[in-house]
Image 1 (cartoon, rainbow, N blue to C red):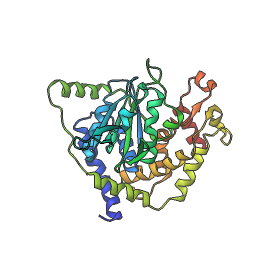
Image 2: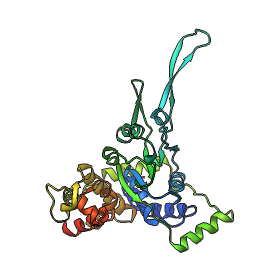
Image 3: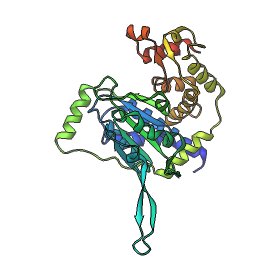
Image 4: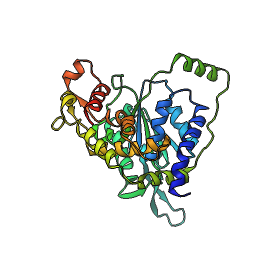
Amino acid sequence: MDELAVLENLGGIRDELMASIGQVVVGQSEVVNLMLTALVSDGHCLFVGVPGLAKTLLVHTVADAVGLGFGRVQFTPDLMPSDITGVEVLEEDPETHRRNARFVQGPVFTNLLLADEINRTPPKTQAALLQAMQERSVTVGGHTYRLEAPFLVFATQNPIEQEGTYPLPEAQQDRFMFSIPVGYPSIEEEEEIVRRTTVGELGTAQPVIDREQLLQIQQTLRRLPTNPDVVRYAVRLASATRPARGAGAAKWIEWGAGPRASQYLAIGARSWAALHGHEVPTLDDVRAVAKAVLRHRILLKFEAQHAGMTPEDVIDRLIEEVS
């Protein structure tokens, strides 16, 4: 399929994916839209919400709908880095009695890795994902092993004020393209959830595309010509979060977003537009993904927190100020 056909079909593919995922997951359409945007952008996602909101089910369902290999790691305080990346073991040849090292792959060797409750494990183990997320490879025992494309980490996180959690270091948060809050369902949605889960009517997500098609979509979106207006706006918006350069709402920010935010705003807008049937991204498409890109990349000053402001409040003000 050529690039034009890929773009023309992407809106329909999104509708089919939403329908397939909806067979299992009730509601959460905004979360699913952002998740699919990250997926076709080849970007990692962080889902933040209290336990019991079907974050794990949602990620597994998306993997089924896209036909990707799926792996899951339950993060706990005693989890070791080798439990994620894998480990070298010594094996003895029964004939020669010579010992050889053999690498046993960890759960990171998959297409879509669910890092469940990633902030329940100490920073040392959290850091085991850094190389995999950035370089799509892991190094064990002096040997580097490549991960099969696509490789994406979709992590769930409990709010940091919950007991027994370890806030993610800023360097690792920056590896995530999006941070997506997962909220409570509406009354109607919760009634449907209860009905489905108490009468044995759980559905299954049917595959809509496969791994090769997803790779083609990702590559096509990366090769699209850049819209100069979108790039200019993405850079100005990210730069406005930096106290040394920004004005207005930036006075509430202690630390702002780096250049990776500008990149993700641009590619995120391109993917959002294509998934919604638009050939050329606009500034509205940048605004559609702005909070997901920026909320975990800005640190508010104490005065802002004391005044009850949230990163979303500041981002709203920045969007009003930047043109």
